[in-house]
Amino acid sequence: PSTPAAIGRMPERVARAWELAYSRPPSEVELKSALDFLAGQIRYLAANPTSAAGREPATFAMANLCQALINSNEFLYVE
Image (cartoon, rainbow, N blue to C red):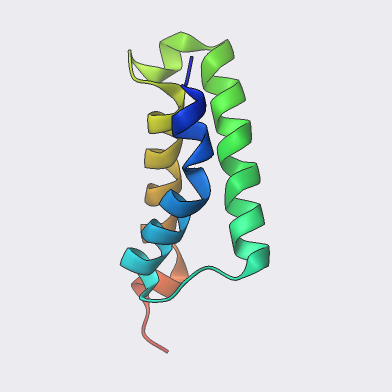
């Protein structure tokens, strides 16, 4: 299972991912949504260890979030 330290750093990891992807911090709503997504992913991956391919659920969940960020319209298209 994921370590409490890894879970505790999730808000700052999400904020860093947002900065790297969008050159801005997440709004409060975006941060909450991302943390809810990560919590759901961690629960799923902990319950289905074969899905995580030997990685920590928190690490795998963060990779899934990053993939979602770089596939978003905000990342792909300039306004």
